[in-house]
Image (spheres, rainbow, N blue to C red):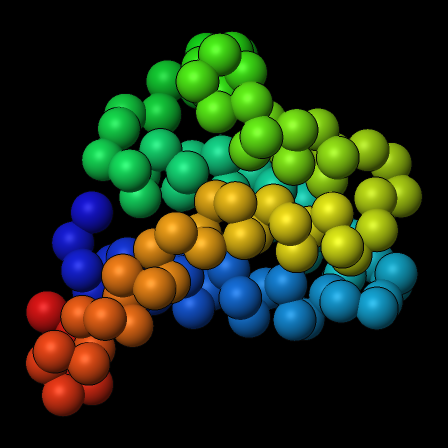
Length: 112
C-alpha cells in the first residue's frame, strides 16, 4: 500500500470510529457495519497481503493472529459496545499509526 493511501486509510478508520461513538441511530449503525467490512480488507492491505475474502481471511486470522480474530468476533456481536470497535481499530490500524507518525517526523510532517 502506498504511503499516502496508508495515511488516508488510518485517518478514515479513526474518524469513522469517532463518528459513531456513543450513538445508536441508523447512521451510526451503518458506520459500524462499514468499518467492520472495511477493516478485514484493510488488515491485509496494510500488511501487504492479498485479501482472499472473508472465509479465508477469518480462517487465516484464527490461525496466525488469534488476538485480532477475537477483536473481530467481539465487534461482530449484535449490540457490541464501542470499546469492541475501538479495540478492533487498534488491532487492525494501530501498528501503522506509529509508523505513519515516524514518517511524518522524518519528512517534516509530509508523508512520502
